[in-house]
Length: 333
Ligand code: AQP
Image 1 (cartoon, rainbow, N blue to C red):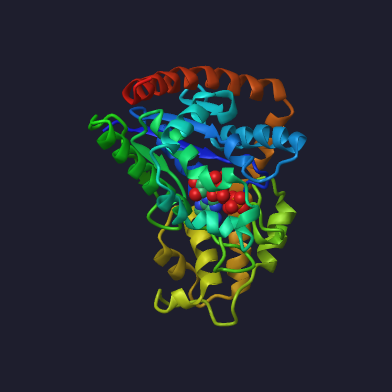
Image 2: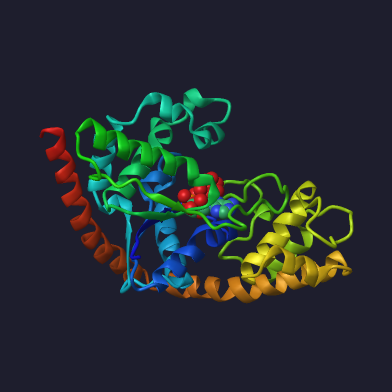
């Protein structure tokens, strides 16, 4: 069955292994199936829900685009663009914001996590972020959205908005409730310093994550220092959930090698932690360094990156504009 795929990544710097294994690797796999229509967006309007330095934002938009391209996304096969160049996303967000309910937004755990204790000081944009995300997806009639596990709740909200709109305006099937495409295994990569915390761009410690721009020595060093426990390497998957750091490192290794957790357990049983960490660092260097080298090469040609985004934006705006006009017509404008 052909799928309409939409997904995005925020250009907030420090693109990391979690973004790659949880999202971008999946984007590339979906693009390989010629039956799929794929649209991938650098979601820069989402990025400004927290304060951004203008020069850094511009640099990060190019860097995220370069990471898409270096990972294997191809502008001839997928539409690649940045959100702020397609005004229909913001217009759609307003229209859908009048459909979404306060109670729905109040349940969003990501807002609670990101706003922290002082939510009065969080931007209104951070609070209504899931509505913009719904607009991103619904304007393209996306059927499937590849995301990391952390975005599942926002996808459910998108589905609720679509269903309420269709019911309020008596137009069944008009807005398409999308399906999340979440990898069954290793969908949540955790911090290298704390196996209970998500690997994240905004973690103040660079040691907590492998950045897509890290060089060989940095990767080796971060894996060497990654937190582990003092028990032996496991013989089976029994009681592994009590060892979050180990499970995370085994998950990263298994995901990079496209193998099951049990294969990894069997590969390393009876060996030392240092044997495993050396092998993990080797595999990371082998998979990540070619991408980071390519990112750096692409970043030298800003004109090319800007051209990819500009032509992608023209294609995206054409599709999104038509849907916004249809939505406005249903509403009565
Ligand atoms: N740790 C993760 N494991 C698996 N997937 C992840 N994603 C993010 N972190 C992990 C997935 O990457 C895609 C793009 O994420 P984003 O740029 O929209 O930002 P985010 O979800 O807020 O991720 P970050 O990197 O952790 O940023 P901060 O620090 O700002 O919260 C999404 O599909 C996401 O699921």
